[in-house]
Image 1 (spheres, rainbow, N blue to C red):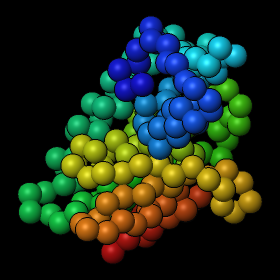
Image 2: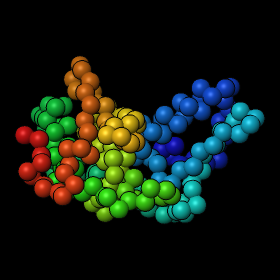
Image 3: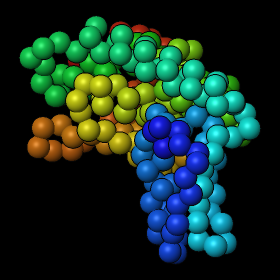
Image 4: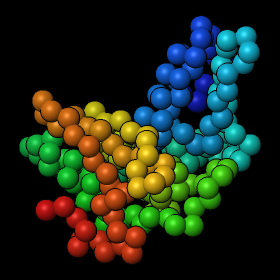
Length: 188
């Protein structure tokens, strides 16, 4: 998925592998730019770029998001920081530099669901926040996955991260006020 290899078909015996594939995509939304997956009746499943973006557009958005993430990390992460300090720095950067996109499309592709939307357009929904958090955490050497689920009466995504020898949940979306207040919302 990370390499956007659409030439490979995957065989599955039963739904377990398909469900695992879906979970992998849900846990790493930083790689989902208009990705369509399906399971065939013969037990294989495939994925491909959706019709909303061309392969060149997808590649361009991924490259821009990665370049921006590469530029952010040295500005917010310093030598000698603990893992907790790094997580706080990533969290606070996102709270200060992105706003929740209340006008994101509910169906079809929308940049608000991606790391690109959060980093380049500076607006996202929970999936975009979770995806960019994964991306920045990985670049800071921290294990993070997005957690898809339900909260507040609807679908939601947040992050599960390794903080030293323990794990914790981080929800940048709910920590970021709708009317962005920048530094006021940052965790001390």
